[in-house]
Length: 94
Image (tube, rainbow, N blue to C red; front, side):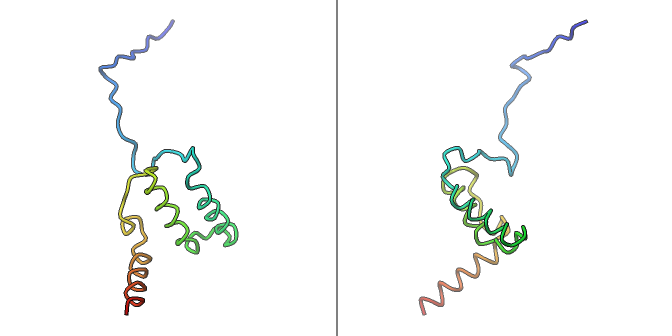
């Protein structure tokens, strides 16, 4: 007995990927930063809290090259790093 499959175009509706699902970096545009991040993880026994600066840099690279949706860094969990950078910039101006 065979089962007929219905591939009617009426029922299929493509949708955007869920948050966190984004295109691979086929061109290697952010490869050097990714390698830097992976090296940091290995050197710190995979404690990602010690590699947050590089992680932020990697996500910025992906957003700049439209490999992921642009999001405020605060929303991605880097509020403390953004605030610290703003404070350092203000102090340098003084």
